[in-house]
Image (cartoon, rainbow, N blue to C red; front, side, top):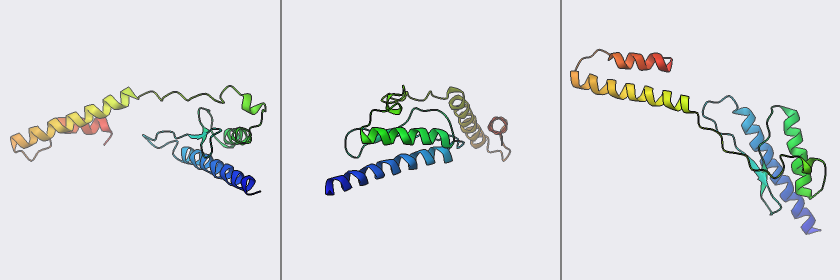
Length: 137
């Protein structure tokens, strides 16, 4: 009986972690620079995973939760045979334009700071004004 209770508690804690990760992803979906987190469920004790599905809202979370439940219980169901079960999510693509833009803005500000220091002028350098325009300031 103690093993059954221990297994149940372990499963509940794993699902709680998966739900926490899903909630965090939903809450931060529009946060610039936020990286999507995943929770992993495996047959090994204390390890769980839910990732690689696309969508938003309750329906997608419900599907992931029901699938995770069946995986934890070791059930062979239609949900555990879905194409996304057991597949690793691919890495997210880098955002080259945003990265290049931020590098450009920092470079412009750095150069402007050097030019302002060298000239001793209290005026804002033209490169700093361009960087502020590009950055939307």
